[in-house]
Length: 117
Length: 114
Image 1: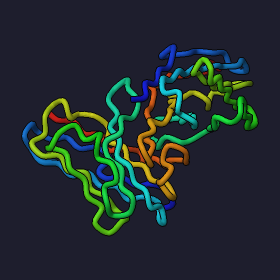
Image 2: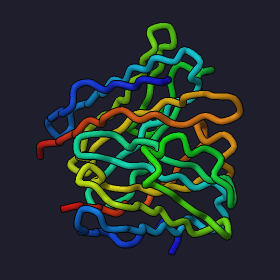
Image 3: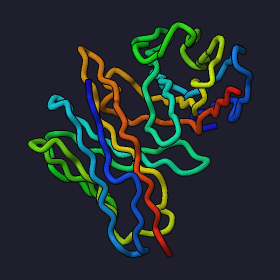
Image 4: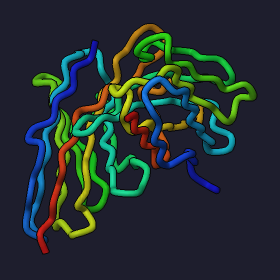
């Protein structure tokens, strides 16, 4: 498709389980971002990839969170030992160049809603 | 770091009226200010943005004004329509070295009454 695709759209899991969320960015976009959005809040930055490398992972809350982008296109956000507080909508976005991420348009996916019971 | 705030959290207007949404930021070095629209079941979309070298930008029914001295910028929607109902997020970049990361406000829910 032409837009950013995220799967699954909804994920319900139990506390302590492992979860993977997938993002397929717009073809040709070198930059990819993960954000987390809790109810009533704006998107909160998690990690930013420029190509295959994580250029900035300062937003990851702790070492249970990890993300990869091995071929510079699809990215996977991995959450280990999930906790109830991880429940949120996880948003993926991509942009064309990314080197001026704060100054170019981000294209967001619809998000993956994670619920940890 | 950058602190971005939006007030109020909800706004209801009559169809055809104008809506104004204000956003404040804290980092005086910020130089780019986008507004994103989030509709149910859709990815957030950029609707308008402004750079710090201009004070106002218009695109049909939508405009954004920037006051760098006061560190706030506002979204103006004229002749509102029901399809303008959505959550609107403002953002400003937190500039650290060569990279700058967007910090988003909490969002404002705009309801346009038919």
